[in-house]
Image (cartoon, rainbow, N blue to C red; front, side, top):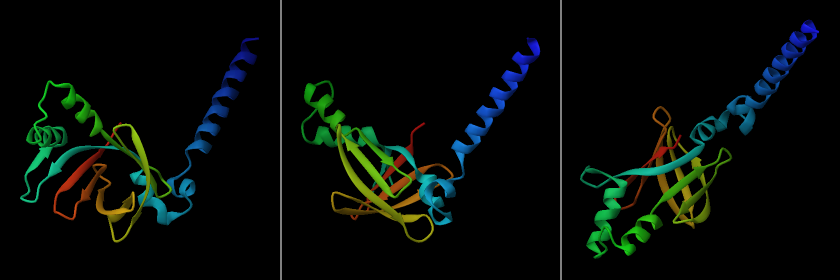
Length: 157
């Protein structure tokens, strides 16, 4: 009976390894070819972590939003402030098929993205086209605003 138990355990381990290997695949296999390697690599959930102003000054995203609200008379500690900060809570879900979902304040909007030369690409959300660069080493997307302000998005774990 002990031998049957060990054989059964060995069989189950082998079966799990085969299933795991088949499920993993390679990025190109999962996404339809070598050309989509960049898109697959970028897949994941990203949140804004910093704003880089036109003069190169970098500030934390939440500090930037807080300062913007203060300029509007909405101060920390008030209900309006908390509601506004929650509204600016943003997540970009980047999918491996060239689509994305941008969720801001609980409202989700669908969009698309594609790569051009190298690590540069464009995103389209609500008929607004934005350029971006993707650093695959640090998993950072930098969205470039036409005014020269950049939003830095980092992949969430």
